[in-house]
Amino acid sequence: MGLLRTGADPYAVPAAIHTKPILAPKGSKNIQDSNLGPDWAYWSRRLDRPPTPKAIFTHILTVLSEV
Image (cartoon, rainbow, N blue to C red; front, side, top):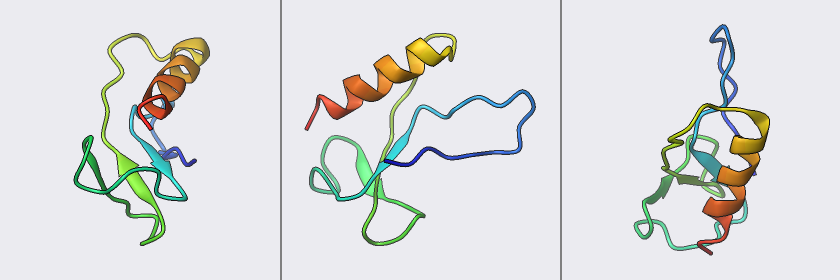
């Protein structure tokens, strides 16, 4: 799994995640090509709460539960 690291200050983890291996077909469940390479999948999602560590971890588990 990959999370985009940005130079934003303060840093906040983006809601989207990248997975390797590709866990579901691209084009389904809002999964797209990843800019990390052809072996990766980008899961486009929104985080609708303040990005605390607990909220981010819960969000990641929720996204992965779709597999």
